[in-house]
Amino acid sequence: MSVEPTLQDEAARAGWLYYVAGMTQDQIAAELGVSRQRAQRLVSRAMAEGLIHVRLNHRIGACLDLEAALRDRFGLDRVRVAPGLGAGADPVRALAPAAAAELERFLRMPEPLVVALGTGRAMRGMVDAMVEMEAPQHRLVSLIGNIAPDGSASFFDVVMRIADKVRAPHYPMPVPVISPTPEENAAFHRLGPVQKVVELAQKADVVFVGVGQMSNDAPLLADGFVSRDELDEMQAAGAAGEVAGWVFDSEGRYLDLGTNRRTGGVRVSQGLDRPSIGIAAGASKVPAIHAAIKSRIINGLVTDETSAKALLARP
Image (cartoon, rainbow, N blue to C red; front, side):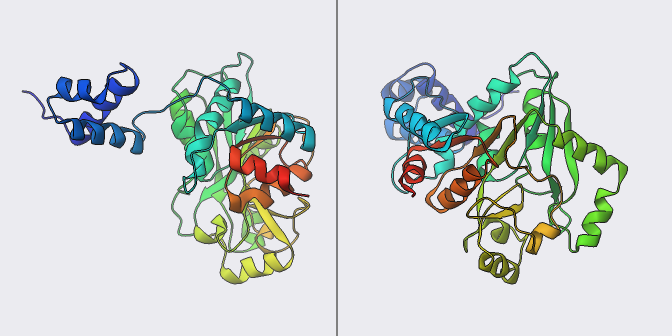
């Protein structure tokens, strides 16, 4: 019994013929028995739905120049700058393939590594852009709790998604992202299994984190982890950004107030002597990225052209 192809089946086949077989839209139309206009829509759908991932194998000169300038200006150990996608485009789409390639570089290393991971949209985009591979020699550990305020699994948690793609042992952080009280947070951290995951995260060989802004569109507010009053309090204290849920000011100093007293998981220390790579781009994130670089919360960066230029333009 034959199965009728779904619209997604058709889009996937059209995308394959366009990007892999190198067919023109007229050739795809003839191959699939559809109009040229439908072939064009199917190819566009394949890209829009993430059925096709494109990797740029040529390093564009302008991006290389920006990488060198960022390394020189901020003393970063490693920088990848992805070509921009134009005004109004989602910067996560631009940086996700470059970020995926950077993580894959570590996962292909033969010696066992502990890879610590933050969360967020950019991190999730990175995972979605990764290729599948076998990397059972490594251990993946989350830096941040995986329980949302309503008790559900945190939507942007990535450690299990990556483990699925690379078949590696993984260790979620079994605590709330932010507990209701400091006492509850401390109680979670007294549990034996939590302490083991925390110890593993603290000795990670490489760290990959998103960088969130603390302006009025802060991800912590949008995702329900902080209240408007708490955000106001932290903004008044100079909050500029957050990494793995931990909020810092414009100098990259962690604040001793607000949700930082209730945040679960592990704080990324300033000045780590091992790779701590930020995955972030976008105009609203530039002040947060800048602060994280200044204090060496991150010593590596994957970003896009527009954000790189904005960082270099800051005093």
